[in-house]
Amino acid sequence: MDDARVPVIDIRGMVKVYSPGGEAEVVALKGVDLCIHAGDFVAIMGPSGSGKSTLMNLIGCLDTPTEGSYHCDGVDVSTLDAEQLAQLRLEKIGFVFQGFNLLPRMSARENVAMPLGYARVPVAERGERADQALAAVGLAERGGHTPSELSGGQQQRVAIARALINQPPVILADEPTGALDSKTGEEILALFKRLRDEGHTVILITHDADVAAHADRILVMRDGELHPQEHDA
Ligand SMILES: Nc1ncnc2c1ncn2[C@@H]1O[C@H](COP(=O)(O)OP(=O)(O)OP(=O)(O)O)[C@@H](O)[C@H]1O
Ligand SMILES: [Mg+2]
Image 1 (spheres, rainbow, N blue to C red):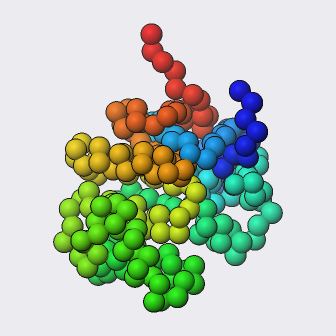
Image 2: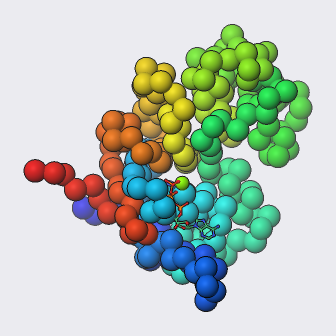
């Protein structure tokens, strides 16, 4: 189908070789094409070692490809220097890491406000913005709690609020429900769907077919190649 909109993620022929030429050489991506438009909710599945995190790191501009092109929201990422890349990450991409990555001594509010410091938002504004983000994930009452005073699902929602604080168009989540029971996992998935409905682009890595089934599109990574999911007869 012809789609005139500029994709949020436009990856062509992406190859990633770790330790090229060396004895430990690994070809982790073998020419991946990936086109994702604003408001898509895409799940990426695939066995351990197939290249999912490698692709995620490249989408998130945390690593550079060996070959191929990547345009993020229309910007050719290869033309950016380190500082510009950091800025792009800050503006365009919210990361939800596996295992939450919250700072244990800080309150939920302080954890959520963290990226605002990098974005040079005035201190006076940060608390208010963090409270808004917490309210958006249903945690308005929990801003003063530290992570150990929150349930697993609440901690994951704090991590999502932190990913959303700069209103990034793209949300990248690596196994966001992996550590949660199925009911809490459903709540997190409902939250991602709401974000999708609000126009965010959601890219989710998961081992769980039931989780992936919530996405609009499922892609499967197999031995460094990305394919649309095949439907078993
Ligand atoms: N920094 C690295 N240096 C060398 N090889 C690496 C590096 N990171 C990953 N690899 C290799 O690249 C391949 C893909 O790894 P990747 O982490 O992308 O897999 P994955 O699909 O995320 O797996 P999992 O489901 O276990 O997280 C693997 O063979 C892995 O050993
Ligand atoms: Mg991985």
